[in-house]
Image (cartoon, rainbow, N blue to C red):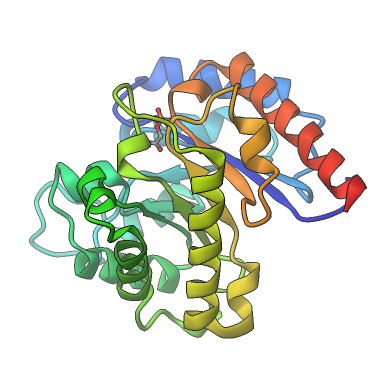
Length: 265
Ligand code: PGA
């Protein structure tokens, strides 16, 4: 499949224990075995406690695994936190940072997230930075400002060798979860364009190559349209991905749709 690489990932949040995670991964691995990771990158972000078994359960390394959070320090008096060294010991490749639930339930600030982004990159991980405006910010007409602040603060002073190790997920907070309203395709396209231009402002031409994923109530009825948008390089899926065969079907349909786009452009 020619064209831009596509990314499909899911964060299992605080669902699925060890057994469920392993069986989900084994099924997903089997169903997606024919997908070439050169063209389609899949990733799953399970709970911390499932990670060691999750790693052992994957036979091929096509599905990347990640952690849902990480401390900005390597060690110290940080009860309840997980250090980058501990995650590196496990052998995972992705660290998800700044998910809306971390920001809004656990009070993580842009400055804290920035420290984590820097530590994650310096520790050799791929960082998946999540950004998104709240409903209130949208109603106040400051969505663009919010996204630009989250990007410019979150990526402040990152090491120059981030290329190929940084992913951005745009997830409007009001679109996430059971009470979320999916963003319209036009809205998502607009915000992805803003994010792309902000990334180019921050990183120069390297900003063009940072994969940009859309997330927030992605489901089989909006995924094909979303992936067709010019600055959407992938989908970050919650509920619609937690059954392996549903996720496989969503991915295949989106790949098919993206291939049609490339054919006609
Ligand atoms: P959702 O979750 O797809 O269930 O809305 C998205 C997310 O939190 O990343």
